[in-house]
Amino acid sequence: MRQRVARLATADGDGKPHAVPVCFALASASIYIALDEKPKEVPASRLKRVRNILENPEVALIADRYAEDWSLLAFVMVRGKAELLDADTGEHDAAVRLLRGKYHQYETMRLEENPIIAIRPERAASWGALGKPDASGPGILDTIHGRRSVRRYLEKDVPGDLVEQVLEAARWAPSPHGRQPWRFAVISREETKERLARAMGEEWRANLEMDGQSTEIVEKRLEGSRRRLLEAPVLVLICLYLEDLDTYPDAERQSGEITMAVQSLGAAAQNALLTAYDLGLDAGWMCAPLFCPERVVEALGLDPKLVPHALLTLGYADGDPPKRRDRKALDDLVVYRD
Ligand SMILES: Cc1cc2nc3c(=O)[nH]c(=O)nc-3n(C[C@H](O)[C@H](O)[C@H](O)COP(=O)(O)O)c2cc1C
Image 1: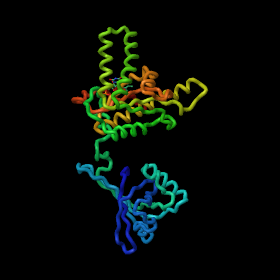
Image 2: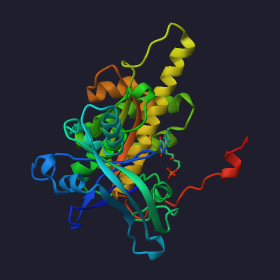
Image 3: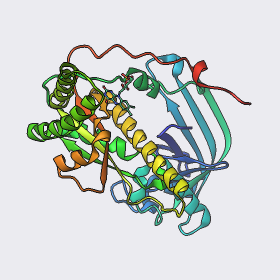
Image 4: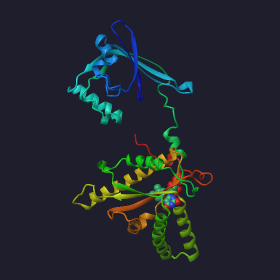
């Protein structure tokens, strides 16, 4: 029952039916439905479903899936008796926690004050392809397989709300102790990109020369990198922010803490890349800031506590997206130890 919405059927004392769409949460022996403030500010006790339950506790709840591919159609129907859980009881509190866990929208609603409907199931019937994954949209694996690094962009603006959604996805990455040890700088103005490209270019030039690269190669690589920065409509610089991490007296644990922060930065970056792709954008990852963090902080006028790590380019690919870069087979990457 991962379905987000179900239909609750109740009947009054005369057996007259009534059905409403509901959000629900499933526990081992009960199904919970909140009475939130949504419906026209009617007091909860006046809602038809509540009056019906008080007159006649017999209810049915149906959660179904429709898909154009009819081999995926499915439903589950539960019949049972409903009761109203009063606020300030242990079960009411547990039900509120369950409902909030499933629907984040409930976090800001005052569910504590209203009774919760608890259905005690007596019979269940089901039909269809319950075991098959939901096919209502492209699955996450399609998104993962489809994304690829893009290094040339069209001169086409990226709407601000799309950039915001990409950042929103990054914000929800897992992080050590939930501390979110990263911050993002968004760059879209030409002069700022130019300043950044110059700052990183100087450092890279010094490094390439130190490696003994010929002047011609150095210039070519620098020009390529500069072009990438200037052509990308939007740059998102992901910085490590270590101020909120736990501190330890020993170096080993402290270094583990920092490694976790870097791992989490990677998760934020991947959330951003996948969401960009899902929104129809293209994106790429440049590691250059990692090698000259102070210069980047200075060029962008950032808080010195930020440590620039990854630069994501965002835009629309110029031409076909690059061919998918193949991956090692799972057999080469995984061992099973039963
Ligand atoms: C930590 C990290 C740093 C990367 N740095 C660069 C970079 O500096 N320049 C670049 O062109 N691609 C960079 N990439 C992108 C990889 O080259 C790319 O992900 C890889 O070749 C696989 O291709 P795909 O992303 O198209 O699947 C980086 C990726 C990661 C995870």
